[in-house]
Image (cartoon, rainbow, N blue to C red; front, side, top):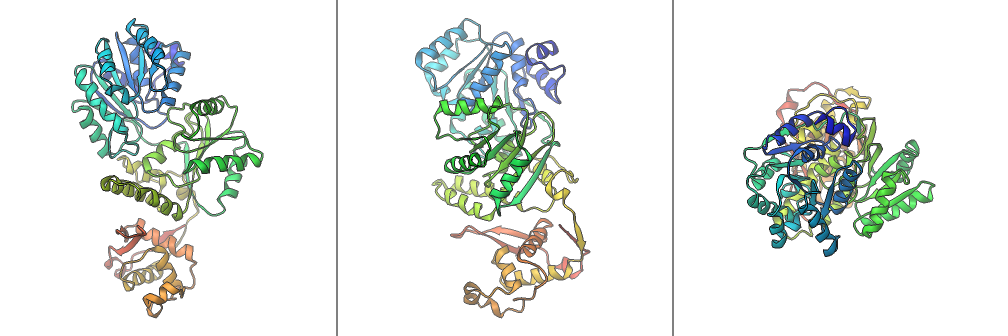
Length: 502
């Protein structure tokens, strides 16, 4: 295996976990592999495919991803092909003939192909040694990128019950892992979990104020380096790419609304360093093995923690220091609410709301961001990473007992029904129309804080939430806002020691 690794991929040794996974596959056993983006998942099935007697089927979610991987394999002297809807019937027939002849070692398939009866009959004529399910989280309704066509894999599993299966993903919570196991019948599979930690990545959340100026400063800092900027909409990617280009930078947009040829050319230019900056929707990046992306910017709020982790994972695959910046505004949450509310299926809508709230929690935490990400994926970590904006910030420690009591009093006296911004307005004495309508200008807590700014009060509230002294509760309302409710009162009566604030 080491000889094949060196010959075809140019590596002298395996990365952490790869050798054990390959051994399990070669022993004809099922495997569930969780490995961070850039950790070398693909090699775990590509290398065994060279040694196994028959063909390896690879289920992949995107046409662009298939093409990238097949092109890379061919460059490395490995015979691989793909079949998907982008090809003509003649092209597909020619590939099927090559597969029957035994020339092809890896065949990449789109999951919807498995619903075609004639194609399933074709597969039954082959000696299939291994089935690899890439981006396996797509099979789970609790995954961040659920694709109904992935459920067709149950048919493949039924047709080839004795063929070993390896399911691979970079982003799966415990719930999603169990769903993958259930859907693919991997009850006896050995699970391999490599650490989700990417220590070379710096995580940073920036307030979305003067964001364009901040963006230009980052581009100046990383001039001539490979950069990916993620936006919420197709329109935003095109306008931002145009604006950046007018500033003297070389940038191209990328989104699913562009022609496949345009996307292919843009992707090739980026991979071969002809264009350093790509402004994209989440349609860009899956399977792109560019090792030297130095900066990933989320110009808008991601929909899920899983998606955010996967997208930031495209930075620093070569192990060198790289930065991941997220511009955050609560206004982005409201924009996403609009689209979530268009989802007709109530169950799906609630899932989307939960995922969005988890993303908001990440943006508003005042504890280590890396630790928060690791804990989210079930990897316990309570230590400071010293490589995120929270850990790197200079902290001033002070006795926050008095201001905490005032915040708690305001939460209680307003009936535990209002959000962070409103509580800050009450404490600072902002006597607007809404406050007057509710009669809250008459409360004893109205205007009792004059030594903290609006932003500082909001930070303090978020710190209390992070320390679980307050909790945010999502209530069903037209605005879908979050409300503060008191979780523990007695802790303040005991006069806890000083809190830390950045």
